[in-house]
Amino acid sequence: MIATLLVGMLCVYLLSFTVMFQLISRRLQDEKMGMDVFALANLMLGCAYVLQLLEGPPGWSWNSLVNHTLTLCSLLAYCVGGARFFGHATPLGKPLLCLAVGYSLLQLLVNWAFGPVARYMLLAGTCSVTFISMVLMLLYGMRSFGKDLRGEMALFAGLISGICVLNLIKLSKLLGGGFEALNMDARFSMVFYVYMCSLATILPPSIVWLVLRRLTDRLRNMAAVDPLTQLLNRRGLITALDRLFHRPGRHARLLLVDVDHFKRINDTYGHQVGDAVLCGVADALRASVRKDDLVCRLGGEEFAVICVGADEKVALRVAERVRGSIEQKTMLHGMHYAGLRCTVTIGISDSFASEAGLGHAMQQADAALYRGKHTGRNRIEQSKTQRRVHTGFEQKIEFEQEIETETLQ
Image (cartoon, rainbow, N blue to C red; front, side, top):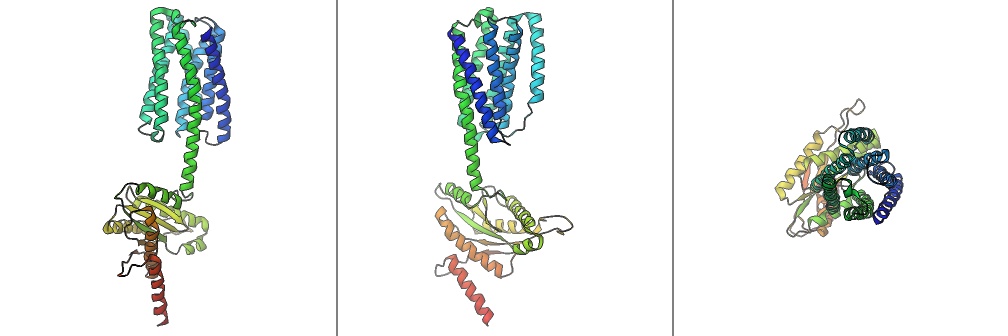
């Protein structure tokens, strides 16, 4: 009686979360993160338990055959939902139909050849193998595609391991005692359905939590990334520097990169081509910097590279690689663009060792960049250390005064 009540509660849980998952998937619109598939999986498993309540004692019946098929199909749907949550466009319709038809025919064959007990053993064994595969995939995912969700995936692996063990015990009991092992009043059935109710209580809210976390992470990334070039923006750069300098002894140099005559490109070809040029520059920057360097679009046609742990020679080498790569890169092909290319001028700051030091490094690099712009463009200029300590802004003013003096003469 209690086990029957637990199965009824299990049906309510599963069907209720079916509705919730479906509502969430509608809100997510284009990228549903597998929630529509999780809803289908819950629906199939809930219907399977409803059929179990209707079929009475275990044995042969069409209700039982459909119940077993729905149970196995729901496991496939959960796997596909998990794959889609991690961004894999895994098909569902055809594999689900093939599994439903194939497993139904296999049940008929096993029941005819070995009897109904063997058919129940087939389900317990197949479910056990499926759960073992799920656990192995989760453990693999903790070290690869799901590194950011290790805690949650470890929880899922532990819970699924439990239901796998229970199915293996059910298989051994069926092998040794037949249908007596499935008696609803037996202690094993009580433990089995208590555990299943616990899973139905824990797993669906955990899946909802994963979706909320993924959405939150996405919003955080959107706030830190430039939408056009997919490089870090100013906010993302500050956050990355805060993490970088959290460890003592770290230092870096700033490369300020500015596209030469970008306004002329916009005026000649239009802003759409200008955006394409900025994306081309961003691609060249990614390909030219070192693995641990940070690349940022500060705004407009101005970019920044943080050369982590670089001395003067390394920073110059990276800057020259960036300058040469952009100079040689054809930004757009076509009759109207004539193999459009561009150049950049780069200013390099002195070494700085804190997130607060970025402002002074920015002034130094900006002053160096300003000198480069006025001495020919398509070049690299380093920060000049003078006897009296000057800020980059002071150097810029002094250089402007020098230009004005030369013009008057």
